[in-house]
Amino acid sequence: MPPILYSPLRRCESRLIHLHPGQWPDPVSFTLYTFSLQPPELPFFEAVSYTWGDQIMAPVICSGMTTQVTKSVETLLRRFRLIADTRLLWVDALCINQDDIQERTDQVQAMDLIYQRASRVLIYLGEADDYSDSAMDAIAERKTSTGSIQKKVLDFFEHRSWFSRVWVLQEVALADCALAICGSKCVPWANFPAWWAQNAAYLQDRIPPSILAYNPAMKKSFLQQLHDTRVSRATDPRDKVYALAGILSPEDRFVLAPDYRKSVAEIYAEVAAKIIKHQSSLRILSATQPFPGEQCPKFDGTSGSWVPNWSKESLLTSLGLSNLYLEPYDAGGSIALTKFETREEMDFLHIKCYGITLDVIQETGSVCPIEAPGESIAKVLNEWNDLISLPEDECFKLTSRLGKGIFFVGEQFFLVDPASDVLWPTIRAQPSTTLELTPDELAKREACPVTIDGLKFCLGRRFLMTKSGLPGLAPPLAIPGDIIAILLGAPVPHVLRKKDSYYTLVGECYVNGVMNGEALAHLSKEIALQVPGHRVRPFQKSKSTAPLEWFLIE
Image (tube, rainbow, N blue to C red):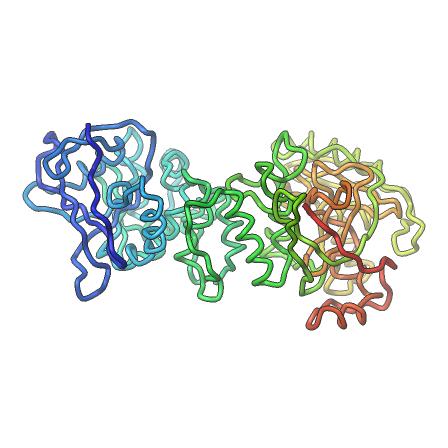
């Protein structure tokens, strides 16, 4: 069957589907027309938000000629078709010439205008199954759901792939009016986040889909949104970046022009460099998480270890990016000093970061399992407890060997007799205290049991001990001999591995007692001269005597 013939588009133009009327069994027929996105000439049209689905094809009639489209597109056109009237729809798979890279790039840049200026956005969640009608009815009522009804709604969110797409954030956030359709059921979109909010107290530790948790009132940075949507999916990995362009705050729209001629590695590296320059911060390094079977957290061998791979979900809870509701870390102070380098012998962009070598890893424990029974986690934590040794520095001395063990009882973890002032804060990755506590208050806090959520930062990580006796949490790929660096502008320390004349970034880490800038106190005057505006919390005594140096990271 012949493909759809597209005529070129001019600036501020797109195409609309004029969907011809018909009964449900009739063949789907439509015509494509060009239209202007400028308000005076804007017709009443509806933009469709949907999932592309599998590449199973089905026949349709476009301008009198039979052609092939994906089954999901054919089905949604059949569902939205009116019996007696023409309907104007915008569906990206048909309204954009997907084979024309330049047009695709231009239309993605205009996507925010299309969804903003659509009269309505129709969210197509697919056709009905045995449980979807009950789920849609419960969501429509916005009431507390229990038992089998709650399970049906949760299964509905989990198994309908639309909820895991990254593009839907922009498509729904920009809509003036959005309706969700599943089979013959139609529910205003506002009911969906309202249902979750109504039932939140009964959903325990369940994490809502990104689209239900998205709150435009919370002005999150581009970096934070990239991190928050890491679990969302995109057919093209480049869209993990481009799909967020339309919902960024004005100060974050720094030359993010979609360009599908570039590779995924090029785009991710370019975005990472721009975020670092724009924010004068190395917080983005906390997004470079390791993946199974990889030596280092790079993703395709054509980009540096410092570049996050947004196309993969992170295995670990990020120390530098996931502590929005906790006391913040500030190990490296406020402003980064960086340089970017490309040499003939380099295959990709390298970054030079200014900071200090805090210490060297001397010993590591087993990796704490991410998804395991509490008893298995407690077993690893007890192994970590045995690794604690008495450091020479007075500020880290313990009055006695750490307790009798860690036990998992009634969904809680207990450290028994006595409570440790090092192990317990370390496995919970606690920042340096903001308030001075009395001995009784400190003992009470450290003796409190901890739930699995309180241990989220140690799950998937190793316990580490440095040569000078500092305990901490290391990425799973860390090994003895790796160095721990505190880089200016990075909220947490990072593990680096020496390789010839440069370093590979192994991942972020936690080191007890240096998370608020304690290791930079001896360099405050020197840093102020070299990095104007740099701020770090003042301390009477520094936890380090290391000099500033450059780290070239591949």
